[in-house]
Image (cartoon, rainbow, N blue to C red; front, side, top):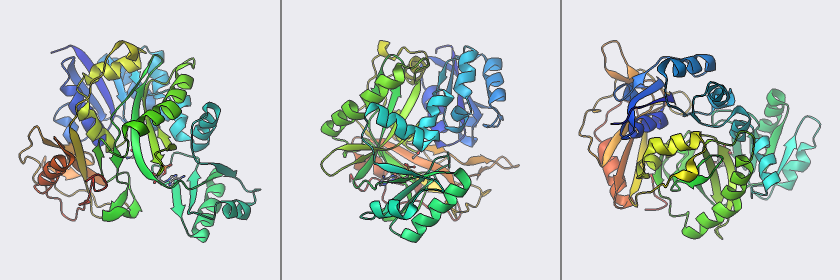
Amino acid sequence: MGDKSVLVIGGGGREHSLCLELSKSPNVAEVHCCPGNAGTSLIATNHNVALSNVDSIVSLAKDLSVDLVVVGPEAPLCDGLANQLNKSGIPCFGPSAELANLEGSKLYAKEIMSKVGVPTASFHILSKDSDIDAALDEFSDNPWVVKRDVLAGGKGVVVTSNREEAKKFIDQSIITDNQVLLEAFLPGEEASMLVVMDGSDFVCLPASQDHKRAYDGDLGPNTGGMGAYCPAPVVTDEVKEKTISRIVKPMHDYLSNLPIPYRGVLYVGLMITQSGDPNVVEFNVRFGDPECQITLPLIESDIFELLHSSSVDKLSEIEVKFSNKHTLTVVLAAEGYPSSPVKGRVIHGLDSEVNTNSWINHAGTGFNESGEIISTGGRVLSCSAIGNSLSDAAKNAYELLSSVELKGSHHRTDIGYRAL
Ligand code: AMP
Ligand code: GLY
């Protein structure tokens, strides 16, 4: 076993997955998580520090003398966590506050895309003096896409064919944020491409597809993600090549030449047109959740080495290998998710047989006073699996899910349907 110590920031399914994979690394002796969840407490040491308290997180990293901090969610990055860790000489997987704006501000992302010539939907910035009706008219052939220019935890985008709804969201956003983006609708199929990058190089991880709507058939309200699978066949070799040459390479050329280069993972949310042309729908400055849970297991090379190299600009010195297997994860959501999830219910069946082909990723879980594992969030856990084919992975994941019990919970029964 190696002697490295890692601190993972966050407490959801993504962070459980990061802790799991890091704890398997031959380089890693100790994994710490802040704040973590019930699942991470079984494989790492949890530390009860609030994510909003950047100073305390930096102190924790110093006290623990960690070799690497891996930041899961975007908010601490927008608050300058990477900047402070870099100042203290602690390698951080996650970009500086300025570059975290690629997720924190849709307008900043649009400006960079326009500067480097990356394909994305055209848009208008609307404020109280704009002719909102004229702008709505211009995009009236398709549903309207309205995006707030703030970190809104997945609630900042409305896609609607109802003009009144679009107008209302525009008006409300202008009141709270002063401005809002109205974007042209892009038809096509979505996919997520996670790209690990630093000042020296970039590595594209296998592309995946998330299922954002709450119910089967992509119906119901938007969620953080109800399940995902990897690789996504919509990203053919040809689509991947176009994505690299038109999007990833120009973004990396720009981001790697800044005084502080982008160090971490850039989540490229793609809309792929019928003719196979990729457009950027959004950037995130972190691993997707649940995309992380099904992407990391397909990395055959050492995860610590990958994440650490990216935090110190040494990606160009390593070779990263991938498995040719398939992965799939199904999210078990609490009753009432996404609008008002019921929390605090005991989860049964977590000790059911977990083998190397399937495993549980904890998300919103904790312990009650009797030491039982209970639900503490909307997305409670996800059942993940790997197989030689996507249908094998789906079978393994759904089999595992059938052994877990949480009163009132719901899940989608059609994860991976586009590829199956
Ligand atoms: P975002 O937060 O920017 O990823 O948007 C949330 C979701 O809205 C995306 O995952 C898409 O499903 C949808 N969406 C965003 N922008 C567009 C667009 N320009 N055209 C079509 N759908 C979009
Ligand atoms: N699953 C989508 C996201 O993490 O933003």
